[in-house]
Image 1 (cartoon, helix red, strand yellow):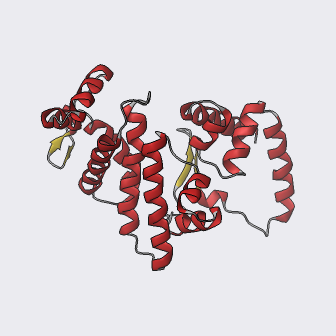
Image 2 (cartoon, one colour):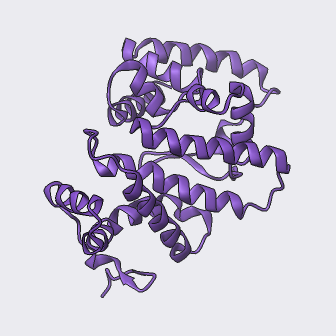
Length: 256
């Protein structure tokens, strides 16, 4: 009973997980209009929704609401998934679930954004979903802008305008012993004497990294690309990019 957590009346400890073979068979039946297979597939992927919802646990939102919104994203992923593409369903579904939850959070955002800016952002999000379904991957900002016939800068500004605000006390790094908060990373122009010393130390720390790690950090933090975009450019998986990025930041932190 101590491990029992209920969301929307569902005991999360009893959620089942489908094997890849079972998923493939159910998806095949779903595309043929089998409603029983559809129900079984949804129930077999609720744990996936739960894992995504847990990423938003620090937002103060009702977990039941987020879980229900996540299930909507799951259903959209089922409806748009292309069996002919050699992509795991979870790889395709997770961005769809995250997008649905973020849209819900944006709609409930207390900060006011102009209607025209919000409309542009929603058009960009709609284009992103369509391209994700077509390309079976997350599209780049350039691809979204081209789809809308807009400039890249207009898309970026619109999407950034509806991003949820963050707290200065949000954790940006945690290695189980030392937590770095966002406020620790805020640039202080008054500490001019220590700034150049830190910059030299940082350059020395980066110089110790491998060429691939340097390129990943450059693309991520200077070019502003997502891990998915970096993975596509370098030719490795998003998981590998995430691992290399984390290792590189850990090495820099140790050196500093």
